[in-house]
Image 1 (cartoon, helix red, strand yellow):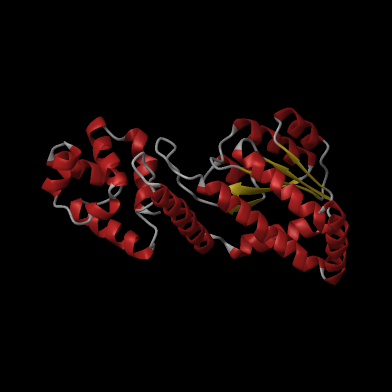
Image 2 (tube, rainbow, N blue to C red):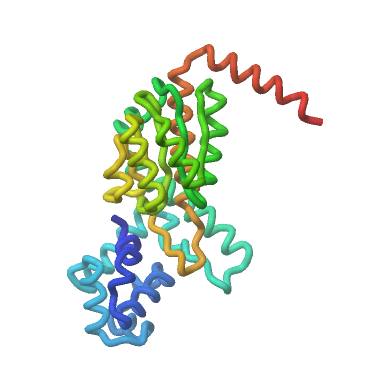
Length: 278
């Protein structure tokens, strides 16, 4: 896990004084590795023992271990530490930060993906009688985009972001049907309830969401996407972009399985769309 992920994950459990250290670190990642413990304590307006407690609370042995781990993370990811957007940023600043943070997140998730799990998901999709995409909020938008991509692949598809419709669709599932469930948190109770109905009906659940979450545990095939986002600061929703890319990966895999006949079908669709353009 990246150090910033550990900090964000532990924010809610930190003491008030330790939270001041965390906030300063998250806003000044590149500068912190050059500070002494006395400097960081002064900048965060806390005591030196508080800095030590903060370091241990996020999994480091002490201040030097914290600085070394942070330096390694910065060296491994060019965009790491330059993600947070604030009120004083210029248009150029926040434009670069959004692009850099998204590209950095995509690289991390790509390297963490289990290729065997992707293969399992493509296998399940390729033999499915029908495929439906479930998601709420931003994940609902990803589900709609997925339906748009997959229906062109000669597959019966639908996307649902309404809980009642999800439940009705779930109860009509049968063996050979697949639901792709998309969630940034992996803990949305309404989504989990719908998926339990899918499982009872004999359908297969593919999840796109964080590891060690109720969603991943419920899924037959869990595509683990771990993206930490702090919604208390100006931060791009990189998880949405990552989920869209994972959907693209699955669509490409399915298209590959369909073979030459699909290419002819897609050419027909493209030709039909020409009449709608000026």
